[in-house]
Image (cartoon, rainbow, N blue to C red; front, side, top):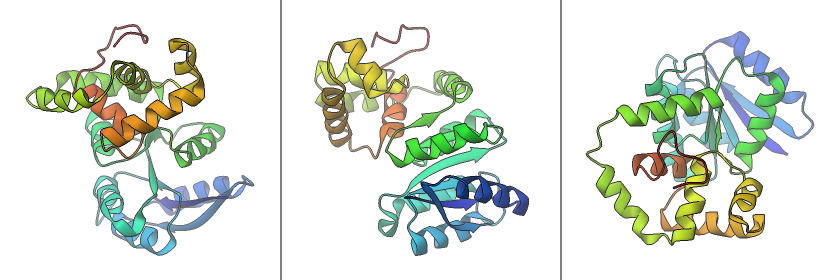
Length: 226
């Protein structure tokens, strides 16, 4: 059973998400909160697997709440899926930098939202195509003063691990990466685990941030290049 917490400042929105999540036999709503401060307390008390987190809220916004939750040892293992009506670049970048494992717009179809919760709970990164496109554009516009230092972190990776990281950053699944590199999904999983350890990254979403910041991949390249 996947345990989920819902955070949104609108009561009707919270109720709608709770009803949708409760309709799935493998999902359980453990509580809800109306702002970021309440969310931090809720997560520490209930230890959900996934938090559906709004961004624009009173008292404390979703980005700060995400940072605090994921920095708290008492919330170890909790993953945050950001849901918002806003798809501005600073929110995308900020959510991922704060440690969120996924980012979806609130107009996402119900079935896709449920699937997204399951993916994030399983440790996958979740970015909608439109969000991924904006994320790429956002990184291109950002100053590259930290690019060299970030790129230096990749020196610990083997060539094969760099190939895998580049494909992870483009949103490919383990099976798709395996097909592209002619290796088994199990081998891909092993590579990803080693990359996470070497780069001290929490999950695949953080690997995406690192890959873009280091310019390991660039927009316009074929997904198989790095």
